[in-house]
Length: 129
Image (cartoon, rainbow, N blue to C red; front, side, top):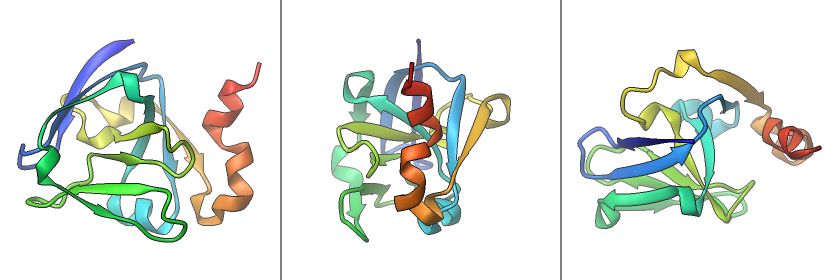
């Protein structure tokens, strides 16, 4: 695993992660499609918020499990608590500094049909022996 830094557009929110960037998830649900979010889910121990905790605002919808965090200044969504793994952090690959999303394998997830798709999600399949 390597360390990467990232943040929002205006720089008010900054974070660091340790991760393996071999693949990430592209979801077609309504919110991910509109935001252009590319998912990289990491353990909380692999995520460190460096600055900007007070600059974040939240949005919840549907089940309310996912806690979507946005910079209240620039509106960028750098990370959040995902419904699929609420004990982890879902980082927006597009918010990592100097990372080319086109160079990483992007796996599709049918979030538009979340309840039916979650059991066969790409990251679930990779956990199986």
